[in-house]
Length: 199
Ligand SMILES: CC(C)(COP(=O)(O)OP(=O)(O)OC[C@H]1O[C@@H](n2cnc3c(N)ncnc32)[C@H](O)[C@@H]1O)[C@@H](O)C(=O)NCCC(=O)NCCS
Ligand SMILES: Nc1ncnc2c1ncn2[C@@H]1O[C@H](COP(=O)(O)OP(=O)(O)OP(=O)(O)O)[C@@H](O)[C@H]1O
Image (cartoon, rainbow, N blue to C red; front, side):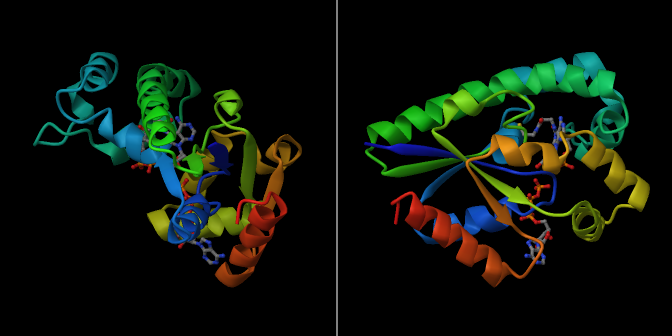
């Protein structure tokens, strides 16, 4: 029997940090951000659809998608974000489901789907339980600015394009508070997995 968990949070809340801890425990992670990059590689269906919707100005000279430029467009324009989502999300969903089935067939005990927009895009039916990685907004802004080299306005725009983390808390089965140290986050994660009798 395989248990399928969802790992979610907000931008720069610490999902990848928690995913690395899970990987270190030997648990398989299917990462929606990674798949979202793969399905828009040069030559893929979604790649051509993106050019059709956003024009060739969002490409680098080598024809790959200029993610920084596309990000500037979609994080500041809800209409355009919806257009991009409508192109990329179906392809991501299809590939995630396929990978999930492959790992189930292989007999993996636990599979974690790391999906930043799990609640926004109503994907909770894919998983049995959801772990939310939470941080306070000021911590989130600070870590996002630092990691991506963004201004406070740019960081706020990205955070505002998602459901507020406080609204995600009641929708999750377990909440890991990542305001503190990495060690404190790891302790919380292990406690959740023990409580669910997964380790
Ligand atoms: C806009 C893009 C080109 C920016 O690329 P970039 O390399 O700068 O960021 P990256 O892909 O690593 O995403 C970082 C984080 O941004 C947030 N984010 C990404 N896309 C979205 C979106 N459409 N709406 C809200 N938040 C988003 C997520 O928290 C994600 O973890 C890229 O994020 C993208 O193609 N987004 C659309 C697909 C999508 O929704 N991906 C999220 C998981 S399916
Ligand atoms: N407990 C912590 N203390 C200090 N820094 C942290 C902590 N957790 C994460 N970080 C840092 O915060 C940033 C965001 O963390 P991470 O990349 O894990 O978030 P994420 O939710 O996967 O982000 P995204 O969805 O935007 O890719 C990273 O630079 C990471 O090193």
